[in-house]
Amino acid sequence: MAYTGISMKKIVFRDADLIEYNLQPSQFLSGFLMELLERDVSAQSVVYTFPHLTIQEFVAALTQFLTPDPGEIGKLLREAHSEEDGRFETFLRFVAGLSSPQSARPLQEFLGLFLHQTTCRVIDWVKEKVEGQIGDTKTETGKRKLLNTFHYLFESQNKALARNTVGSVETLSFSRLRLTPIDCAVLSHVIGLCDTIKHLDLWQCYIQCEGLRRLGSVLHKCQELSLCSSEVGDSGVKLLSVALRNPECKIQKLDLCDNTLTNSCAEDLASALSTNRSLIDLNLGVNKLGDSGVKLLSVALRNPDCKIQKLHLHDNDLSDPCAKDLASALSTNRSLIDLNLSLNNLGDSGVKLLSVALRNPDCKIQKLHLYENALTDSCAQDLASALCTKQSLRILNLGTNSFTDQSVPALRNLILTCRNLEWISLNVNDLSESCAEDLASALSTNRSLIDLDLSLNKLGDSGVKLLSVALRNPDLSIKMHVGHW
Image (cartoon, rainbow, N blue to C red; front, top):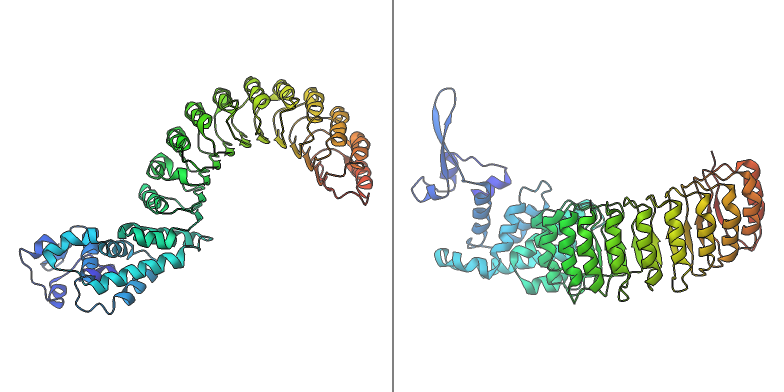
């Protein structure tokens, strides 16, 4: 009766239902069903309901293990799982859980032994679901189904089954799927039994601090961890810092972009970075660390044991006061090759300070992003001359600033000097057709540049024509963007 009720989305039962299933109202039955008085126009009648839908689902699951003939259990499970509206989800989790000896043993003292054949078929069904779903995470439906199968695996408490089905998994992606703290606890259980996990993608899963707390014990096992847009906050980063300090930590790439982080978490994160020996790629973009937060992080970056190679601090409310600390870190750090400071307000004075550090021969910067930083011609010479000393430089983004034609001689020299420069962006500046000839002459001799973005300037048709002539050189393979106002 309980199972049929779930199947038909029925929670209220009448005398006729009890008679159909050979049940009689009694004191024993009242321990499972509540009597309710139903009033209609002409009379009153008694109806019955389980105290809670969860009890109805548990009773329905329990019945499967007490049925003498288990021949239909496989068909029943397949049909229940095929329903897309989730009506059987809790029921199926109970079925998986009752296959566990730990769950079954205390019940068997009152109800007798569960049918072994049913337990075996349930375990086989869970195995089949996990193996069939483990690689299907390209769609939201696939991710949700995989998460549900992990719930079955968790409820079964069958470590051998978990190791056989997910023990060799390298990537788990639940991006853009909102996860509850219970989901995170289930995921933690699964990852804990997986020895090969490399990439855990929880981008836009909104797990928040509580979800991260449930995952805390296994995070150190992952090589790549994406928590972008997951609302973990400062308190979440403090939990994550524990994983980073774990001597067995394997995290190499950590994405904490867009997590409402402030300077309050910077001290814990800096402390973790000072001891961590695995992390090489850290994304802290689109947060509110501010100058004080970056100052604390710079202390960790100055640590000679710090292995950070890529650091993203774009859109973090940074201004010129933090430039001195960043410059100090750049001057001493031997590993940093990719630095993103875009969408801040470093200004000319801040970039001039950075330029001093960039001249350091130990600085091996390859990618530098200074997009939208309120830069003007005042810093162009300092920045360009510093970068001219960097034969390692491959990517330079100076877009959405206020460079004019006055900066072009310095930029021209940079293009001529940096023989490994592959991509440079000067889009959305104040360049005019007067600078086109200088730029064209620089482009005509550079053999490494493959992408030049000059869009949304004021080059005009004549300026674009000059540049196009230079790019006709058969030795060049430069893709140029010149859309203009």
